[in-house]
Image (cartoon, rainbow over all chains, first blue to last red; front, side, top):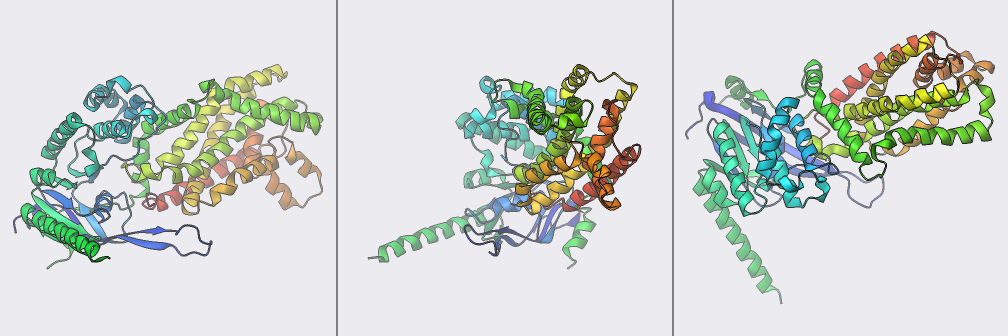
Length: 252
Length: 288
C-alpha cells in the first residue's frame, strides 16, 4: 500500500473509543447513566497529500470521529496523534444569536485566533462570500437555518489549516452557494497537508477523495480505494433495503 | 510491528486533545484576550437588545436594587439610623457586591450553557467564565458615575481615599474570577448546584453586610472570637469593607487594615485554586 512510510504520516488515530453518558429521561434520581458507544476502537492513518472520505449511515459515529480527532470530544481510550492541531470546520453553534451577523463575524474571527486588525480586513470578504450583505446587520436569530449555516461556513473557512476536517453539513445553502462552498473547500484542500471529509454525498466523495473509510456502528467496516469501498457500501445499502422490503411483504 | 505511539513519535506527531501545561494554557487565554473582551461586550449588548432602554439598563439595574433595599431595610426596618450615611453605605454595598454575585452566578453557568461553543470551536473553555467576569467588571465601570453621584448627593466628603477604590476593585477582580472558575467547573459536573446558587449568593450578601452593618453587630455581640473572625474576614465582608473604606470617609468598618490584607490573601488563594481546578477539568467540558 502506498504511503505507509512513517515520514509522510500526518494523522494517526489509534484505537479510539468515545462513549457518551446520558441520564435516561423521567426516572428517579437513583437512575443509572446509560453509556452510548459512539466509537468502539477506530484506527486510521493519514499521510501527506491524502484526502480521506468517511462514509456511513446516520449514527455510525462519523461526526464524533471528526470531533474526537479535533480534540473537541474527550476520548475514553486510544489516542489521536497529529503533525499540527487538526481543525474542524463544522457549522457549529452561532456565537451570539441575538447579535447581528456582522458582530458574529467579528467574534468568530477573534475566536479563530485572528487579531483585531485582521478581523477588520477579513470582514468584507466574509460578508461577500456569504452573500448575505443585505441582512448582515440583522440579528442572527432572524436568519433562516440556511442563511446561518452560510455565514458560519464563510467565517470558519476564512482561515487555511494544515490538517483540515470537514463536516458534510457544510454543503448547505442554495445551488449558487453550494457551488461556491465546494470551490472554497477545494481551495482549502489544496492548501492543506491532509484532509478528512465526512459526507453522505458519494459523488462529492468520489470527486475529491483519494481514499475512503466506511464507518459502521462505531467501527471501521472498510478502508481502501475510493471506488471499492463505495461499491461495498452501496451494495450493503441495497441489501438492507431488500431485506426491509421482504420483511414488509412477509407481514400479513 | 512497532506500536502506534512509537510510529507517531518517529513521524514527529504529537498527541491531540492533551491538556496543555498550565503556563501554556494561560498563555492561550492571554492570546485570546481580545476575544474575551469582545465576547463580554457582545453578551452585555445581547442581553439588552430586547429592552427599550437598551444599554441604559446597565445603570438602572443596580439603581433599582439599591432603591428596593433602601425602602425595605432603610425605611421599613430602620437601618438608616445605624450608619451615618445609610444611602451611601447601601450604594457602595450594592454596586460592589453585584460584581462578585453576578460574576459567580453567570460564571458558574458559562461553561454548561455554552457546551456547543466549547465542542465546536478550538478555544480553551477558560474563556467563558473569564468573559462572564469581564462582563460584570465592565458593567461596574459603566455604573461608577452613578455610584459617585449618589455619594456626592448624600453629602459624602470628597477624600483622597477615593483614589484607593480602583485598587480595591483590582484586588476584588481576581477573587471574583477565581470564584467563577471554581463554580464553573463544579456546575458543569453537577448542574444541580446552579439551581441553589442564586439564593446562596443573596444570603451571603446579606450576611456580609451589603444592606446592613452586620459585621459591627457581630463585633458588638459577645460571640466567640472565631465567629467574629468568620463574619468579618469572609471574602464578601472583606471586599465590601475595603471598598467602603475607600469611598465612605464617614464610615469606619471593623477590621481596619486587616481587611486589606485579608482581601489580598483571599484574591491570591481563590484565583490560584480557581485556575488550577478549572485547568484540570479542561478536556471534559465539551462532553454532552
